[in-house]
Length: 251
Image (cartoon, rainbow, N blue to C red; front, side):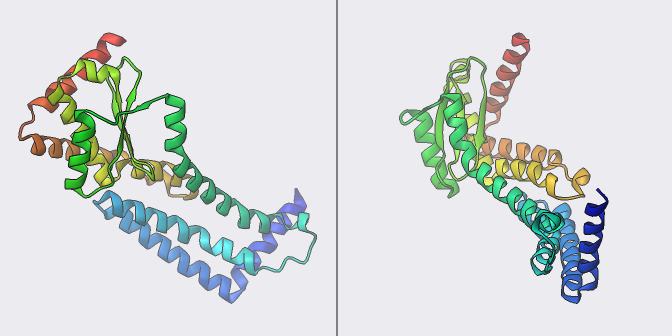
């Protein structure tokens, strides 16, 4: 334990007293703070994602950089701080990227959902995706009695609609729900939620990062889009009312 503490002390002394490492540390911390301020003051979800990612990258960069430049002359097992600083951030970012890319495929497999490749839902999503200039998400039907609908915005964007929702709602109400979900795809709301929850692990400012306010605003924007597309809010309101009623009865 004492040897490890001494090694960490040597490591941070190298970080502080090496001019290149010190300037890299100072610049990166300033840049990290700037991007965090931009993240907090931005209204756009896409910008929030970019600013938060930049904040984390600049936060971990000086430690990885100094680990690369630090010549540890001791045996490898005694250079654990160097190994830790090199591999922990890189392994974390690699795992995050892999999880983000693989999650939709794993979820499709685990939920045993079926692709909806015909019918009005498929046609509506295709038409509106062109209007919104977004990649057309696949529509999946879930064999579930509970009326639910949600989206995954990813390398493989998808909208999941349960059989219970299709049965409980009218065609116009289902259309309103799909329009709502398409708005989420346009703004990449799922990507923001995934990024915010994941990147909290990499920043000491995680206690100040909250996705709730932005997501509530995103829900309002998605509702507005559905209402504007249908030129009425009646169908969306009735859909929400039926879903809430079903949830109360299911308790």
